[in-house]
Length: 289
Length: 186
Image (cartoon, rainbow over all chains, first blue to last red):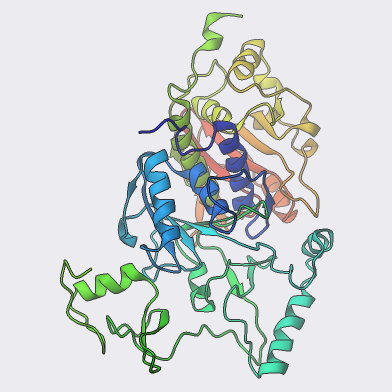
């Protein structure tokens, strides 16, 4: 396999991370401090998610990595190869075949099963950080369940823009207690945070791990007269025609030409394989990619 | 030190502990779900499952409290050799092992308002373990499930402390189930 210990990290580090994961699952939405290690990749490239994955992977796992929904970007490819090399795990791009999925900023369109685990890469785990820079203060606010400031922020959105303009990293309240940053997923994904699989969040630079067990109540913050609304581009995917998936907008020429396509590449490809064709798409051919 | 103190650990620590942790994590994420563990052969009276949990999670950074039911020199030697964890009083423990009757439940750390994670995890050795008895609801449980708990009111008052509280792992022979503080016992 390689000269590394299984899954790169030493055993004592894994035990420390594993204990943090268990406390995270026992206190859903609470950020457990952990002694984040330096990883062979820069902060901001998913060092938190990688450490969580290293602590939970077994040799029997099938591992998938997505970056904004895509399996084939640099970040996703390098992390997938990292664990292929250091843990010897099988890898896949198909959501349904994976047992552990590490993600940067998306939840797969396909609903996860109860035998699947989703690991999020988190840049800023503290939802109150941009409102209150002091860790001492935000920790006190969480302990007192003092989340008024977050509602003021959402209210200011409404007073400035006429609507809650927060489109990603939309704050949620977990099991009626902790306000949590779901990582910068689009708010379109927020309803999927209540799922059958285990969700683990790792922030390497900020040294925090948190978790959402399966079937846990996750409520996006809102107001009675301005209810939470998951939004997406008002369009269908130009490649596969899907109307229910989150879309990326691509500029395709210098004349303002653009197209919308699914951000979840596996979802889009599976649909095209099944014969769905969008407005600018062509029928799927195996060697076309 | 007797030779058998040196035996009964994981054959391949990295791989065996990864499988064991997956089982423990799944149990903690899905309260009431019973998992079967393998890989450790601890000296009596410690059960196989409890031995696997200690080997997977404990090291010199995790003080352990052994209840009178489990406080034997042989077991101390085994834990010391395989994990290096120090033995402490209940108040200072991060993990505790023993039968329900012998664990001083009110003595353990339940965390602080600002750090609710600084709380003990109790490994409770049981005579039997089955999905009968007390009804469980809460995070990780679809609708409801049941688990043979040694008592119900102690777990109800523990859940009332949320977000503070203790987390429990019930072990019986080679099987285990967990009950985090979020689970409502009714």
